Length: 313
View 1 (tube, rainbow, N blue to C red):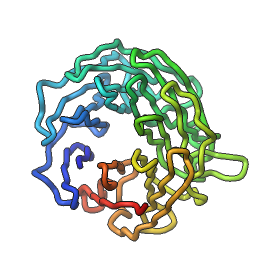
View 2 (view 1 turned 90 degrees about the vertical axis):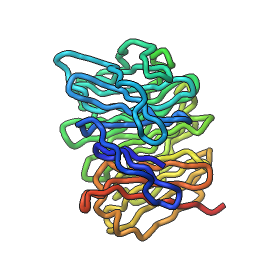
View 3 (view 1 turned 45 degrees about the horizontal axis):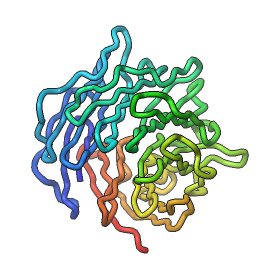
View 4 (view 1 turned 120 degrees about the horizontal axis):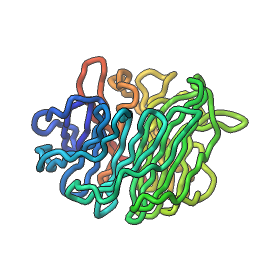
């Protein structure tokens, strides 16, 4: 288990014990990382540049960092990366207005140019979560209008960067009605995205499933009825598993599992007081073939947190 947390690279064993020391990372707060089965690709933004650094499984650097994108007089706000089986797929947000894509080989060398996926003239792009299949890559982006009206939008591209599909699967909602950025994953057959969205009746976290070409597979499924959740995160494994902190229940971690069709099969609330101070947007969930682990940064005591758990049948 590995987490990239506020400029440090931390590793844990399955019991939650730290392995080795912290690994310092470049001086920026905007990171993401992807595992390719043997090591990691770390990506980060710095002013008008987007970079990638390969890491061995112990966190040691492999070769020099590679400049992926340079855009003079623009600012790289957020970026995300995923492994598609042969290369790394990187989406990045620039000036809070444009979403761009670049694909690299396993050696981090770019295979495509810096490609424009979409632009927004009337809203800000706030974050991006990335998942990849052997034939395509998906970006889930949170967008905001006038500082209050939020929605999540999806873009699926081929590995050459050609746009295959775009969607906003659930409606906009006011920021006071909920929270949490969208998260994307690939389960070997389909994409999954967990995001907040509005319906005529209420706001809730939803699970949306898409084919590799970006076609919706059934309507989005509401994961919980109470929208007062924070820091949504998603993992593919035993179907789909999502986790969030409950805003109105201090110290509670909520886990929800859905089957491959999006039907809710299990909910689990854990009493976890130490997670009350987890920094907003710093949680991540993963499946290791036997259980799930969630990693986050505790802003109160400035240390990484790790919890591993298993769902019943």
